[in-house]
Length: 289
Image (cartoon, rainbow, N blue to C red; front, side, top):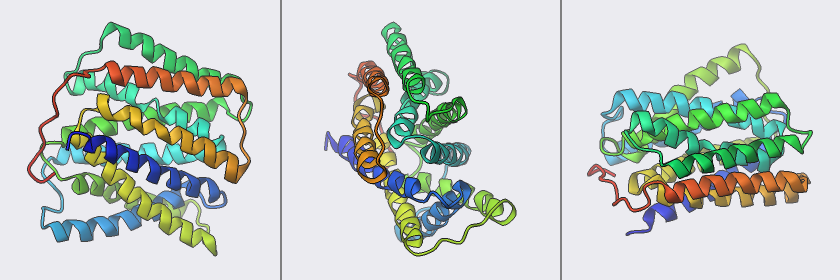
């Protein structure tokens, strides 16, 4: 089906919106502990899933699967930090500059070319990021920098996913995230800080783990099914979800100039993804995808 990549990315964005709500709500649970619970649930689901499919547990493209695991775990941890310390819509928008870094890294990792007009779109998006910061005192330069770093590392993770397009099943690609993140965050829970969840926190941690698993799976399916230039514009429905969730559940409102900044980011990133290789044929995939 020609549009299956778009369907996958829309579903992934919706699932991620629920995940972000859970992270924002779990204000008393340390970030490394949230990532640990998310990882241990994802690890369990992935092992069962892979065994049912009867495919190699550790996949084939080990180098890029490991890079995907380390970069994905690091980017998620940093993103969760920003969710906890700035308005949800702002944190989500800053994370959504990751396709720019995906394109820039792809020039070296995938041999892709950047058209001259794309640089204008890149500049527009980054201007938008600093407009968001400049008109909202709730956003510190520290967490702005953390958000940009998260987006950069996410760009590396997306390139690693595309490197595995022809070699590994999407669930194998997803599996490497918890494979890397579980022992690292587990050690952090033992040595840094542990807060025992209570009541609804247990439920939200389980929802977060399950929904993130399927959100990552469908994002990987989308990147396997089509070029990012076609599917990534539809990812930005997540900003609308974040604005609604932030307002309805956390009473977050944004200055008009911050909304303008969000608009500049979205315009810059969407125009870039529409321009970049828009007429490419569908990418080849492995037989297991």
